[in-house]
Image (cartoon, rainbow, N blue to C red; front, side, top):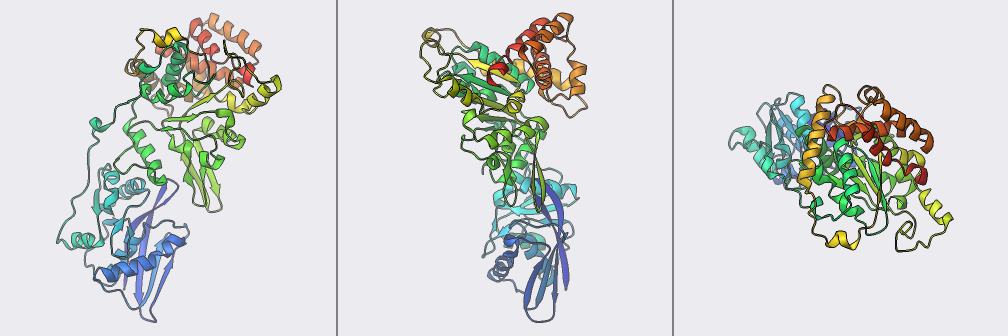
Length: 506
């Protein structure tokens, strides 16, 4: 007796169609599982055997061979339990229903409970793409799977509910919910709370409007971390496609909150400076996404930037340039998206008080140089905006001047992003910071005065070609914020200010 059922496989965030085949034949009782299974998949034999017996079904007392196809792709995870269970019951004629239009995903406990698994969203999307009509998933993954339309997503608490649905005795209601915009939590952190620091706020507004990476350099207590944490409050809201992309990464990593269907707010990740390079980029024997990918479509904040391990800092090069992280292992390569805004913060010296108007720095010149040399030129070159953060005086803290709210700043950012969306329609580019060299030449045309100023600054500051391109893109963003079609002298002059730290920190 032979049967086969559909399921889905996943490697990284890449999914693929899987067919579970079960053959029951005469001979000594034996249960063989083939198809390049890992340890978790091999152990499914015992979980499935116990589930079948404990739920009142008959476990075939024969030679059993289960093949998980395609046989040349390594299978990982515990979510093949349910399709193996269904294939065995179908092969032993305990399920009479035609299963061709169903897919099965889920881990089984010994008493037949279906436990939640990671990666449900990308697997359900793949099942829909494969033309499957309905997919059984664990009840604990119902919210995550419910965002996919065009396929019946059937959440089940145990195998008894699955069998009852297939027999028609008690149907499972498909889970599907429209995205409720009102369910998105409003920002609690607001730039209204930040006193003074008008120049820094302006720089962060430009960064948000153009998707530019930035680094803040200033003495302790000047509000670097405070402002970085509020950056998300002025970023444009995520599109539905961006929410799906980000949620897929969180689903695979097992980081999706239990009460969330989608990641509806731009991620803000702030790893500690002791994080390893692998923790940032991702990895492991079965590669999982790291902090860079978990910040996809959001902000990666790296406080105390020089204190991060050098390998960790250098691992930022490819993601900042290409927007992806590629992890290669013997079993294959995985590419995770990493379209991030990097926001770094650092002190000007080891003691933190170089350049402070009232507190004297105690560091030697050699100590300052060693500290600044912890950030390599190539990494700094990939950071668009460099911001000096000055101390706030007493009058600014106690003054009655009302600061702008994040909502007001976000309106300007949204207008600038709308211009960029129209500009880059039909391309994969979303914002000015991601312009290709060809697009930069096309859309960053300078006036004669602006070009003259940039030429002088290029020679005086010893800029690299990459820094030159960064200034052009920042200038384009400043012009967009002002609603100007042309890049004028003032736009370039302001953009150059955000690269002045090249000569001090390279």
